[in-house]
Image 1 (cartoon, rainbow, N blue to C red):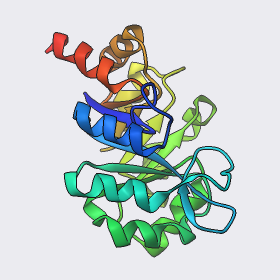
Image 2 (tube, rainbow, N blue to C red; image 1 turned 30 degrees about the horizontal axis):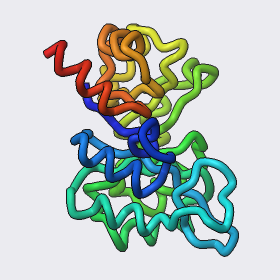
Image 3 (cartoon, rainbow, N blue to C red; image 1 turned 30 degrees about the vertical axis):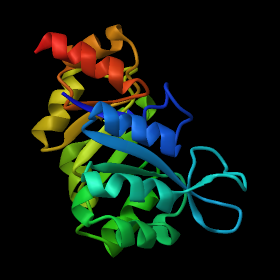
Length: 204
């Protein structure tokens, strides 16, 4: 089960910050998820919410990660059209996975950057809409990122049978980690990757 640092090691440092990213790299995670937004001046920034003028430039975050070759899961909170060029300037396509809750963002990426891996972030209310036989043809994805709440073994197996990796969010407690292991997901997004990694080590 892979461990992805949700906005960096966000339990140890402010989320989407250089400090959180460095902590995650120090821990040795399997990937780092970063929220992508546009700042007030139209500059790409790392921010979950509507960014303020002091938001961290996305370029700064990506340049910290690039030399390590650690995979980066980009969560597009807004139109990727103005953000993806910067990402491709800094990272190789193979180091990135582009994700979003919004299907229109993923469709745009499919049309304009078909070689870039895509992942759909799914809330529980969306689970019933995910029929791989139809969805997979309209919008091919590499992975689905479902909310842990409401997730079942049957759904996980159905998605994996379609060839998708299943990365659940957000798992922060030992109970969550255990549930994810039982569900058979391929990976988790966690605010506390240090704790997750230590816990998983005891299970191997």
